Length: 339
Image (cartoon, rainbow, N blue to C red; front, side, top):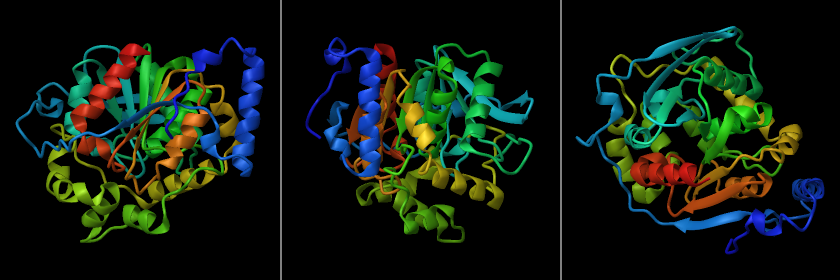
């Protein structure tokens, strides 16, 4: 991808309804394999190359070591949601990924966001204090939980950031509840429909496994080889770890439910059509070395969302908020401020 496309440059050429129809037809051609994604326009902000910046538990300021943040629980009609909120400014709500809890967020990444924004992190249902009624649920249920949190905390002009599977939840939220979102940020995520590329079988097995070698196997799929030594040394030290929060056990029921969400998302033509109507500014961040959700997922997302900007990060892995906590936070803050 070496071209740049600005939606405003063609806004006067076709009425909105015709532009939307043309885009939908093009998407259907992509899904049927008659058109490749690179033939569709996308706002491509270019490729950035950042230096690895893992903090490895340094004394640099991190919000989770302050006395302030305490886990709170929001009671909703469907159950409870455990969350933390800290920082000042317009709110940014972060949705965790597959088999991930709040602890999987990089503490320095969150702290840098909190310099400019109120940060809200929470556990998806079935994890920690987030316990909803019923063991079976869909991506729309998880999006509904996020909507309940935004409403329950009275958040206005919220930016919603989803990492990995959290990006799927964020997309569904943007489809179902567009009025709740002012900006959409998708980090290492995947689109709905048949053009999505699910994690390879060996990667899926590594992420959902257990045992004495589980940590090393997960590090090997979350990070490229160049960053692996630092990741193994720093990951645990750099996790979000506020006092009183214990990283929860992810049950087999949660794993099964989230596996189904990923599989069904790849078959979700309704979400594919709905995403075309999501007009909020969207920032798509893709690591070129992501082995979990390959970068072409983000390319396809960039073609589907009408108001998206795609940024590719050279040598970025699936969990690149650990590789580049400050640079990634700064890029997100700048996007929110200028869109």
